[in-house]
Figure 1: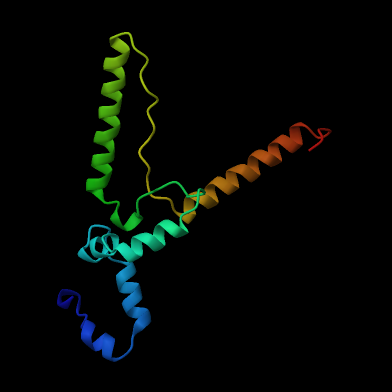
Figure 2: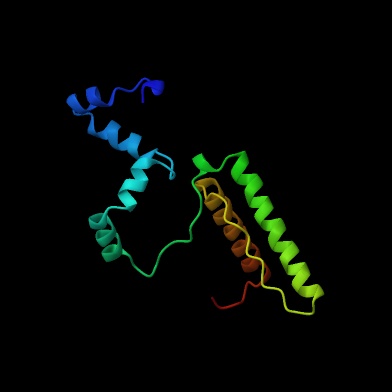
Length: 132
């Protein structure tokens, strides 16, 4: 962490717990810390015990969605398209191509809510006597 000017032992001695937790939360998914956590049997048992059926759809973190991730997503989509075309050319029914997820942000959620409000307003203007 010296590259970033962070002395973890000093933070520990100064009891800067919030800063340490924020630093841990900002670690990339492919870090040794996350590997150690996911290979810890006690953590795995707790995680399985807390899992519910209503899990949100996975989306990558925006901080990890760089140019390489965008290009790999495009390659995945292109390969799925080629696979579907080959299956269709052979007379089979190609599988539905599901877009690879992109990061979800509050900006997109607000845009979707604004679009929904606009659509609801338009429908109410066009059908003033409809029962809702």
